[in-house]
Image 1 (cartoon, rainbow over the protein chains, first blue to last red):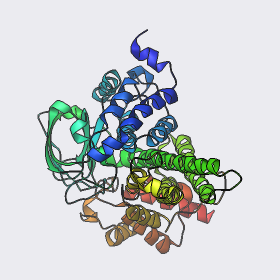
Image 2: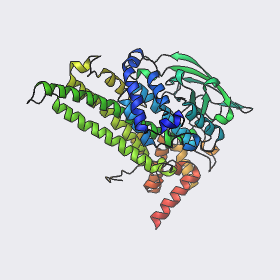
Image 3: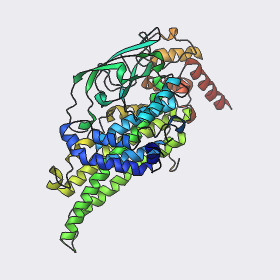
Image 4: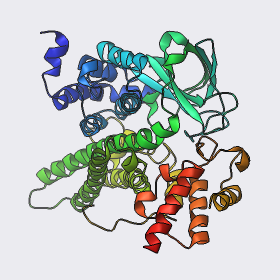
Length: 393
Length: 82
């Protein structure tokens, strides 16, 4: 039995918990130094969790998005930067597994991801376009079977530590901004010239620096399906669901800390209900809302999986957008409640009840694909979309 | 009907290219149709034909080309007449 098969015999949850333990130990240092969460990511690789969503014929475990979401929630409770890096990597994996089937190069690449536990980054943001991933200025040039691309990428999360990067661009020099393709470039096929430093309030360990990306690769590394289809059917929904899961994780850990604060206070003064207890009950109810929101979203996604029409439906996009808006807003309220419960012990760094990192990390949620942009998008769809008023539908 | 579709696309589609240059079967999203503009065109079609797009036609595919819009409208109008 090889190491890989021995590890795979354990449940994914068990492996994720072991990796999360390592990530938690370094979370504060990753945050204060704004450095790549190397220990957590190395642990995830050692647990062979990078390629689990890939189908078994290619070396993966055929895990569902729900299973990966569970891992994101476990990691979110330990180190948000590790969780976010893992989630973003899985968004790329979902796009590749679902939308490059039958492409020999991409299937061989997915096998390599499993064999070597590679980390895939993505470059969608671009100077002059902002965060709208469905628009590109740069265009890929194909000549004699070679594809060349230069992109002024305002953000490439964990770019310096990626083993490969998926880059969006226009299909050719004359294509409209929204006529995009995605291309996988391997580490030795590109250079990154850093243009900005990721020195932020939270999510500091994702190291989402800006770069001028210059890549050259065989043409076959361009994904065969249009990026519009990948974004609409996979990327947006998968992002909202995996992010929602890890945001739930951040809030869940904050509530756990608040609960332990209240418990300690209760033990000190038996017979009295501590002042924070009522707020804890409120926080617990809000946390359940977040959890229910994510779980319902995952259920809807799994039910639509592989059905292009269902994934393209407006009602599906509205539902996924609502998962994102609801979770990103509510976690801030929850963590704020926890801060009120823990008081100065929560506000201060380095206590068992510290919540500063949680609160700062959680603030990124409403900005990662701006909630205003998403609300604008939903409001457009609601002009024609009919509301599903059923409870279970 | 395609004439009306093309007129409304020209008015509300906000395409970066002239509608006349887009073939009936060509992908409108590739031609630069945004999701916001597609909804505006949909609203204009609902107003023009006094119809409502049913849930199963509210997706990207129904608006992917002039032909696709034409097919969706034909289906709605046929259902309405029935």
